[in-house]
Length: 190
Length: 187
Length: 95
Image (cartoon, rainbow over all chains, first blue to last red; front, side):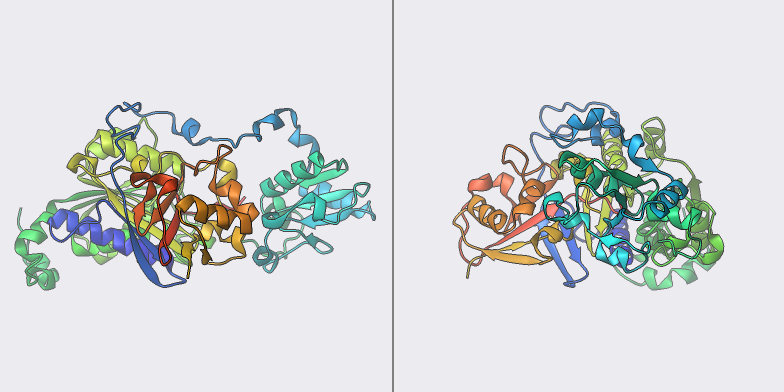
C-alpha cells in the first residue's frame, strides 16, 4: 500500500510540473509515515559544495556508479584474507553434514518476523539485529551451522564468531530460500 | 496539437477545471515523461499518468513480474508472472487509455544509454530501487537539464521531492552526498 | 519536557523499536550524544569513526537541515524536535 500513496504523490508532482501550476515540491522533502499516518516536510537546500551542481564540481561527467556506491565500512576491508568459500555448504551438503553431526547447533540469524514465516527444524533463533558472540550462549567447541534468508547475513555472523574464537563453523549457501528449493519443497518461499 | 472528440469527452472533467482546461490538457498531451521502475511506485505512477493523458510515457525496467510482486505492484496481474514488467505495465496503461503512446525500454539503465534516453523526454520520474541507479539518474538528469521527480520508500516510510538544479534547486547529491556503505544498508 | 528525536524506520531496531525518543541537551550534539548513550548500538550507525554524522544521514532541527545552521552546535531548547532522515532507495534489500 505504501508505494501506492507515494507513487500517486509523485504522479501529482509530475502533472503540476507539466501544467506549471501550483507549488511544486522543489526544495522540500516530503516524508510520509504510514504507521503514524503523517506527512512531514523538511527543507532541502542547494549545497554550494555539491560535487555535481556546486560551485566547484568534481563530477563533470557520468562516473562508475557501481564503484561510487561500493563503500566499505572502515574495518571491514581487513577481512580480505577470509576465505568465505571454505565455510559454505550447498543445501544438500548442509543437510547431510547436519544429519551426521548430532552435536551440531543450528543457528538461524534472521529476524523474528522471518522466523514466523518458516524455519528449519531444530534451529535456534539469534537475530543479527542483536547478535553478539559474547552473549550468544554458543559453545566454542560445538560445531555451529548458520543460515539466514540468502546466506549473506549468516556469513557476517560467521565472521563475527570466527573473530571471537569460534572455529567450527558452517554457512548455508543460498540461505533458507535455496534450502526450500533444493531440500524442502514443502517450505514456503518469501 | 488538438484533442479529438473522444479525447474531449474522456478528459471533460479536466477540461472544466480552470486549473487544467483545454490549455492544460494539451500540455499533458504534448508532455513526454520517462519513468524509471515499473514496480511498486511505477505501477500507480504509470497508471495515473496514462489515464490523465500524458502524450508519451517511457517505461524503463529490466525485471520480470514475480509472484512476490503482486501484493503491491498493482499494474501486474497474476497472469503476468514471468513477463517483463515494462510490457505488463504498458498493457495495463493502454487498456485504460489507448490514446497515449507508451515506449517500453526493457533494459537496465547504464551510463552508456542514459543520456540519449533522457534527451528524448521532458521530465524524469525516479521510482528505482537501488542507490547506484539513483545517483546515475540524478547525474544524468543534471547533465541533460531535466527536472527529476524522485520518490523512494523503505518499509512504512516514503520520501518524495523534486530535484531541478536548472531552476536553481538542489539535486540528489545536495541532499545525500553519498550512499550508505553496503554493510549499513538496512535490511 | 525535553527535545524530541524522531527515529526513522531504518534505525528503529537500535532504539527498542521506538518512533521517537525524548532526551535532554542544549545543542544538537548533546541531544544526539544523550541518545547514543542510552542506545549504544545506534552510535556507529549514526556517526562515522571521527564522530561526524554519516553522509547518507541528514539531521533536521525543526524541519531545517543543521548543515545550514550551526551544525552539531546548533542550539536546541525544550520542545524542539530533531528529525533523523537517512537516504533510502526503495525496493527489497534482504540478503
